[in-house]
Length: 401
Image: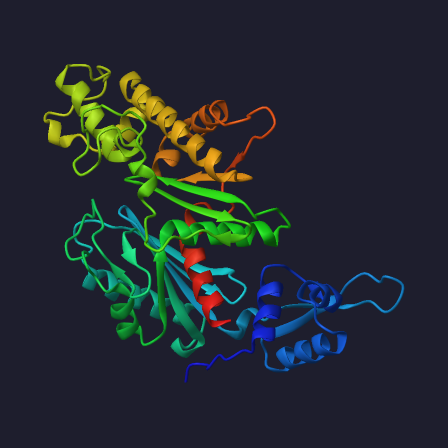
């Protein structure tokens, strides 16, 4: 039987405080949550007896007895985190401290229809349970971080563009997975999940993470913002709205469905493919004599561009360089609006071209308001490609605990 979780607000506060740190003393909890010493002692003792917390040793003495340190009981329950993107899916099994016990990634191709995807998820969760000698009842919930747009409340994917398989439009993914696996399922957009996942890891390492901008550059441009320690969310899921930012008003349309002059026309995978096709028609391929040129324009895709990057194709390299410059201008606009401390940029474009993120940072710094006095710190995330799945698992932990 699956564990029933019901915590008072005070216990939730204690759990969340400890879960975002490592080895916390009662005095620190007391001060942070403004609890009386006797109340803190009683609640901590209750949570240890319930198995939710563990005493993890003793801290340094401050003149008296060494304080007991508390940590989350990793094995109290387990959470599944899932990322759904256009290129690939990731599934992870996490303990309650959000340590990854197992992670699997697979391509999302034209065969990966919803029913195939859900059955594969169920098979992998069963395999994880067998590997780690767990029962399904020990998994307290599933979190899904997905491309949008989506309805967070109902867990419905509305109409994801550029999806390789059919059947994902208006899909109640939360309900379908919950029925198949018989456990709670929460859904949010992938960029938000990545941002809170990275924030958690920053805090665990004692790093500042109160003002953080997360950007994923791939098939589309997806963003999330943490300000004052909290995720900034509007009334409607618009994680892809950054790509609609107009940076070249008056330009002709490039990508179907995108406004003329919108950033995604210049800094996205479909944009790069279309721009190279234009060069191809003009006979400017940049392809060396040792590399066969594509016989047809239809053969030009992102995999082809990656191969040409490895062969130092000057035309492809120039297109990636221009793409990064445009993205840097867009990022500068976000920095000027939100003033983040850190900017994390990930995604397929960053992975494909080694200098991409450096160009984005350089251009963004150039156009940042009051640049000599304020510069956001550009950095690689701590979770990298696992950020969305980890953040999706965190959604569940935050909801239940």
